[in-house]
Image (tube, rainbow, N blue to C red; front, side):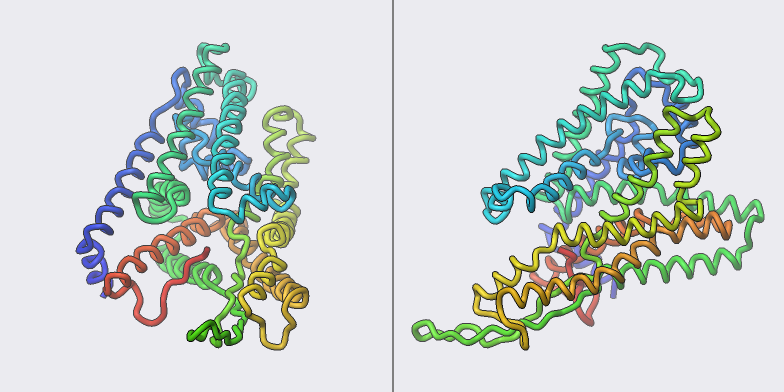
Length: 437
């Protein structure tokens, strides 16, 4: 059945063309991720990054697909664009003019343009900071990363890395327009998936070194499948609110009279709470690596905030739940949804339209946000707990798993829409894949 579906995909010329364009552009991204910035000793930098796991550099390298540790032309990856997008999203509820632009088609294009401009400024600022950081051997335990430091190297790094970020942003837009799926998400997806062969080889080496048996490996594989199934279940989970539309007679036509559902996602905030939480928690370790690497007191202080420390793990979980509520409150506007339902003549059975509906939706979202936050905390802490406390080489979890599953579901949903539109069967026959957005 699945093989028939894959054959059907390549029978549709437009869908085949979109998939081939997507794969080709992603291949360009992966080739560029191995092109280093001029004037850098890449091998010394990689050795340093092997010792810097668990700092904020690891998060940057995750979204850069390993390009940051190699300091390639795509060293910043698409992270400046994500940062600019999050900043714009947080500013929209604060500034009425931006909120007004968000409601109009032309206004949304302007917001996209603001995001692009913000991305360039962020990339320029970050690339300058990276260049200055690379020039100082004290930051790398005496290793000489840049043989010829100075403003020539700084300007070259700024131009190269910022141009790489701009090219990735354009590449993502081309994938979205001419390919299949969300381009920015697929670029992050490709960078994460590219690491899985390395993780697989590490697991095989552990088996060969008799760190654990084949039976334990089989149990680990089953556990990984169950974890993925759980992530898919919660990612797709929704609370359906019934909405009844009253009948209206316009001329000879009758409108309304049907019941629909308003889907409220359990994981409304996506992976953003984990990104915020790990950025804050790893900030003390990053500062210590810069200024207090030789001070035992600074090292001990930073160790407390490590996700491998019991205190750090507890803070990590609390911050994830907190940012789940925070980001949900920013992105979910119950009053606007209630006004739209009322404008089109709808109502929730048993709830008055208007303010009462907004309060009801806010109460429901507050209740389902808590299990969503707990779910994110469990997924984020799972690989940490297994590798640190149970000494199991489990590399399949955390932020990367959430991104991979979410992007895969979105892309499959788009492919299935193309198949169903042309009267082909999709990937599943009982029910349909639901989009996350």
